[in-house]
Length: 279
Image 1 (tube, rainbow, N blue to C red):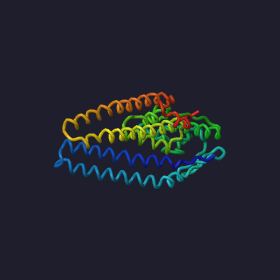
Image 2 (image 1 turned 60 degrees about the vertical axis):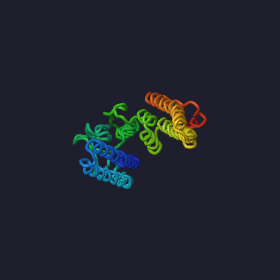
Image 3 (image 1 turned 135 degrees about the vertical axis):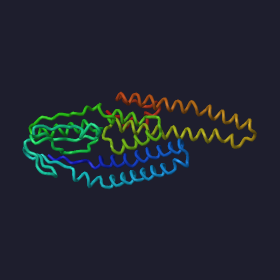
């Protein structure tokens, strides 16, 4: 039985580093410019910009080397021993899934033996804790020893329900990023269903809003006179407000249902998304 790291785990790590840390640096730089002013904050903002660029470059490198890094992370069970790139592990008394330390979110599969725990696979995503536990049980059964998990499925923030909730979060950057990332890397059908429905709803509602802005904005351009333009603006805002509120309400309710692990089809979208509904 051979354990092999998944290159997609490295791709996720690189993608998070490429997107999240540069965005955080950019946000901090903007806040510094607002709080300190251009004269005092320009130098610090430039330094944060360079730091964000460095994080982005490191993320690109990690994504490019994901396959090579995965090939070097393996373990093979043969008889009563486990072979790893660092040598053989004998006298295994148990297999355990745990975090490397309390500050890390990534998980590892360890082999317990009289010489101390030996790491078999590391940097495993906590979103797949149930799959990782199943692999640990299979390895333990192969060796004839016991297995245990020191990480509960609800302990980490990246459970399938949490990922599905992020797909519906009514913050455009977060919901789109979470939905696209879930479609690319998640293996959970519930998460993929929520991601597809969220993206379709996002683009359809955005198209409706853009259409209303175009149609409602034409009178402001064509009509002359401040009174007519003001009236057109009031009508435009009055027409857009209930749609925006309804859009946010639908997303929040969908996020609430996803948080509880319930499949909810947005009214009017069944003919599109029912084909992806998990059985």
